[in-house]
Every structure is written in structure tokens, then in C-alpha cells.
Amino acid sequence: MMRSLLFRNLGLKILSLCFALVLWYSVVSERQSNLLVTVPLTFVNVPKTMKVRMVSDERVSLHLEGPISSLRAMEIGKLRGTIDLAGAHEGKSRFELLPSHFNLPEGVKVAGISPEVVYIVLEKLKTFKLPVKPRLKGKIDLHYAIRKVYVIPKHVWVTGDRKARSSIDNIPTEVIDIDGLKQDLEKEVSLEVPRDVRLKENIEHVEVHVELREKVWDKEVDGVKVSLERPVGVYSCVVEPGLIKVYVRGWATLIDSLSASDVKASIPIKGLAPGVHYLAPKVVVPQGVKVMSTSPEKIKVVVSVRTRK
Image 1 (cartoon, one colour):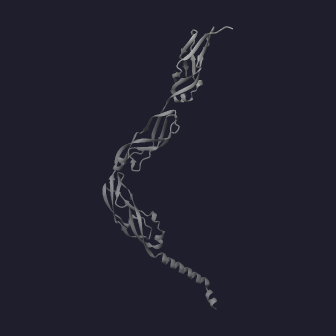
Image 2 (image 1 turned 60 degrees about the horizontal axis):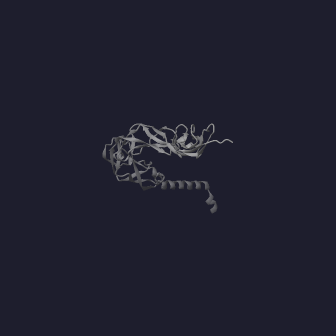
């Protein structure tokens, strides 16, 4: 009997239970609560010739009230207080904070703001000229040296506050890679403007020029063979030593690859009488290379009469 009563109209009873649960959840979720949050302040429509130099409070505390469901669903990290500075003047200004300054979700109200007033100091920006500084990275080819680096334009006009004017002494370019560079470079690059200043003119790129010069190297070439013209008739010659060192100077690319086979040394023996002579060798080197000295400076040449057999 009891069992039949319990299961009589079971569908209707389950529906009633579900309705009661929904009603209970609705009542609970709409129950009012409060929440204390800290919100940052942002500034919009700052006059182009001004900069916010100081604000009495960068964050304020909000006492919020609203349904528990709304407070729980609220993204606190996205809350902001916005102050419109359109028409503000240089110097210190007073701003009263109102609930309308904050981006609150529907149903959430502001019960209190602390502090209720903030003070903002606006400073007029200065216009001044700064040099453009090319930034180079890497090492050029070892045969060359940098002769000159310059940029077009050399200077740019910027606007900034007094602190920026005293602390920033140039506007750098983006980094230019010159590793292994062997010839002059001309490249358009952008500027990396410090955040405390802004360009007065719309300059998208500047031209950076890197001019190179080839180095002059000295080198000792060892093992250069000494040759001579064989005497005619009854004479014969012997040279000592047969190999010498030649000290040369020239463009680095030529000197670097120069070897003993590229240097020719000879002894002029025409007209020499029999006997011992000490003569300076005649050295021929490729164009662009200069002979500085030889070691030894003079070669022993022994001229003798060739004996007949």
C-alpha cells in the first residue's frame, strides 16, 4: 500500500522536485554580496603636447555590491578606471572618481571608492634634436677596417619631458649585422625610439652607410729561390745562399695569399770578373706589393773560370 502511494504520479513528483531545485538555486544566486577589489587607473585623450608626470594614486580600491552570481563571474583582472584628460592643462589637476569611470558588469554597483579624489600633474613636452646612432654587430672581414660610418639623416627631432631630455643622448637604429663584411654597405633600417620620447616627424627608415678600407700588411716570405744568368764562355758561378727571405708590404688580400713561388729573386752577373762578389738581389713581386728588404741583403757570388776537360 505504502509502495503504491510512493510511486503514484512519479513523473509529476520528479518535475516538482526539479522546479524546487531551480527556484532554490535562483534565490541563492541572486542573493546580494559585496567585494573589495583594487583597480588600476588609465588615462585617455592625453593632450599631444603633454605627458602625465605624476599621479597621486595609480590604483584605487572599490567596494562593490551585487548578486553573488555576478560577482563570481566578474573578471577582476580586466577592471579599469578610465580618466579622460581631454582639455586638461599643464600643472596639477584634481579629478573626482565616480562609478561611471569604471567598467563594471551589469548588476554590480560601487558602494565606495578609496581614494575618492586623485591628483594628476601634466608636464608640457619639449622639442629637441638628437643624433641618430647606428648599431653594428659582428666583425668585418679581417683584411679590412672600417673607414667611416654615417647615417642619413644625422639627427631627428623628438618630443619628451625634461627627464628624457637630460637622460637620452641619441636615437639608436635597429642592429645591423656586419659580420664578414668585405665591401661598403648601404642599408635602410628603422629607428628604435626610446619609450620616453616620440618622433616629431614620421620617419620610417634612415640610411646607414658603412665604408671600408683595405688594410696594409707586412709579411716575411721565406724560401725565395735566387736565380742568375749563366755566364757565357769560360765562366761559371755559384751563389750563397740559394734561398733568401723577402720582407714585403701591400694590400692585405694580396699579402695574405702571397707565397715564395710568387716572388722572383735574381742576381745580375753580366760583366762580372772572376772572383768573389757580394751583390743585392733583384726582387720582382706582384703589382700592389712592395719589397721592403731581403735577408741577407747581399748574396755571395763566386765567379770562376770553367776548367776544360
